Length: 373
Image 1 (cartoon, one colour):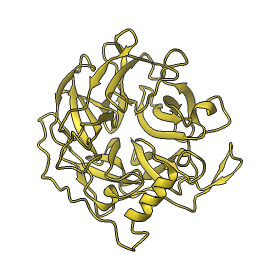
Image 2 (tube, rainbow, N blue to C red):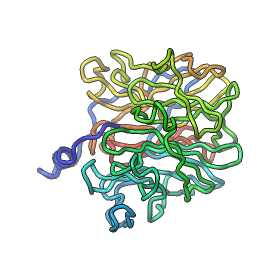
Image 3 (tube, rainbow, N blue to C red):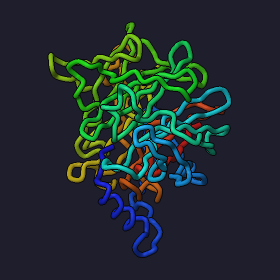
Image 4 (cartoon, rainbow, N blue to C red):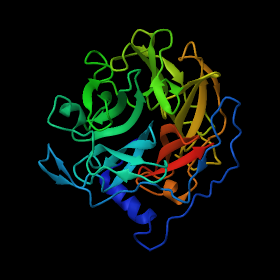
């Protein structure tokens, strides 16, 4: 997601959330029928509106920031864009939280919450991944650690991709953990060579399903990852830590999915949760932004919606099919009004209790869930 100046966000929040005239936020007028899904697609997904949003900002949780050397309200301003994983009888969310301090819209850190039903979550009191006085500080400070996505390796360890933002450049990063609580930062996904200053984010690693667990999948001897927040690109790896972007020719990144004029994804496309290898191909849930001029006129201008694409299981860089309709789009007040209006940004997907749970950021301010039987 793109950042807005803090002063502008405060003004918009006051106007849109009724801070000036006491009016409640309005729902979107852009209502649509259920999407027409291809036979290979996941869904339809139904929003759990009786409970949504399931996570909101909290003012009372404090964290001693090792860089500022003071306590901060680390999830005071916004919580959004979570990764999800099932471990035994528990669903865990790793979510992005922002404070209100600093010059880049607040600093982002990654918190951890858990649930026994996938709907009602208890939060850990402090973030589990955050900017620190370490060798990654120059990439992570003071914008922070953003937008996690998670898979497991064959040994049960967790591999997290996230975005580091230093105030100028977004860089795709990797961290690993044996238990979701203690993380080892592995540094930039694309190494310290020619790609080190490349604007890169949103790394979604292709996985396979083992029960309720999503495990990184080797295809043709390699791991594969979709990434990018304009067009979508591809990278490969031998270990899910060190990645090499694919090029169509030397110096030119290979595009594997691009925006479409007059559709919900007319301005940009960006990976959602880790894509899943199925019998029909690789199913990728992705985020698309509706262009204000050349977009879908039945949706709000600038709306973020979820789409689905199918890629070749033998060559994950080859697009096989693509849905025409948005599968999830902003329609509820908690999705329409917030730090960035008209946003359903999907990032967390897991299986639990004979259902699929899809977790997403709403208006860059809160977290919601939709389910599919």
